Image 1 (cartoon, helix red, strand yellow):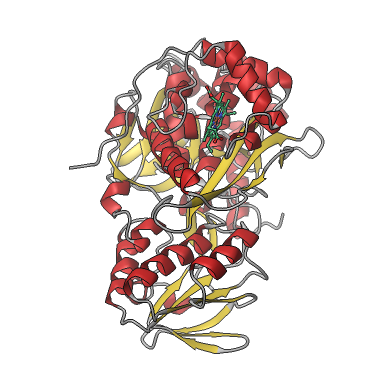
Image 2 (spheres, chains in turn brown, orange):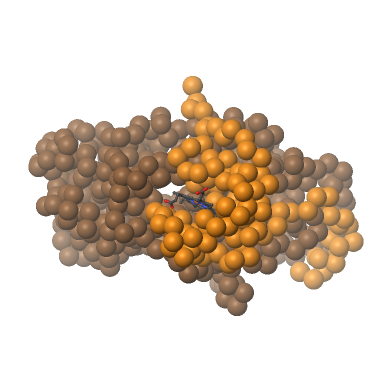
Length: 423
Length: 107
């Protein structure tokens, strides 16, 4: 690992803190009088799950605080269906009151600084000490190669719609306002990014909307990857059969320039004009991970111990969900599976035990190809004792074909994961 | 690091007096995405809470072998060991059935 100046300051601060430890040890001894406090930053799938299971599995013996700037939870899974027209954003928006019923404290605020050695963090409204810190900040967008998109006005013209919310509605409105015969251009970043099959599901949903309302419209997919990164054969078949002649897929098409006003993009090979332009930017660990210095892999993702999701570089700090550096799909189910292993390990650690030496968990991603039919990719992952990472177990794979039956199960998945995470 | 651990050791009694959940409990929780918390599904998938352990074990083994056709369960059953399936059968058989609910939409 190369250290920059800021890293160095952090490390020297850490050396100083070592000599002061008896003091912080005293502070810690005081804290044990009360119940241990875990602060979770981020109330998405990963953070909310960690918070709930910490409370549930400890029978309320742990104080859990969730810090989330947004007033409610908006599901990214199913948000492509808003573009297809079969769901509204309101259908995917939920309150946090279910979590409060578990005795979880919700603080609607933003973290401005974290001192992992003193175990306290700074919010706009004050300071908050903790025993363990869980960060689940999702992804942050990287605009280094396309700086013109790095402002709110540009993102009003050219939405990313890769965090469900107002951006999703904006893209849906642009598609609705597009003339029949118009061209929708979507850019897919190089993997890893949040939700590997998500961009291709989006293509299906937009195609489904076009075939009902704008049958002469076209879709151009500019994919920075050499091929469809998830459920490749299935998506290719669906595009050829359900949406014949509508979708033009171009691999190895990384954007080099964007003209926001003209809605025009350049790749190494060509210039492409759009009526509606959707650029999904490259991604890295969410801002809080950067803030605490946990994003140590390429300054992008967070290296963790897969037995606990403890950061490899920041003490008493755990990272779960999309920010983790791993060859694991950045999905909602994955985020919750990691969150439960993390919660389990934190409880073991607080109880003076070793965490489970070989965690196993499930992951499934459903993709909807129209309003009713879906298909899955699913694997069990098992901790590999030699490699010390989670590896797919035998028997994983994808659907034979999309079906209405799996469409119903995909809705059941959504409802059950919402129930599990938020009530 | 060593210094830090020793120092902490001096001050640390465990902060928590209850044991953390075991391997099977944590594994069972990853089924919740489709079957609800502790197997109490809100609907659309089978409720696992309170299932008879031998029925559960048989279904899982049949998903694994393909005797029982499934859309997705074969993927989840095949990746588990027999010991894990036995542990899950016991775990879910001991879960009380509770009505599960969906979170509410904000007003």
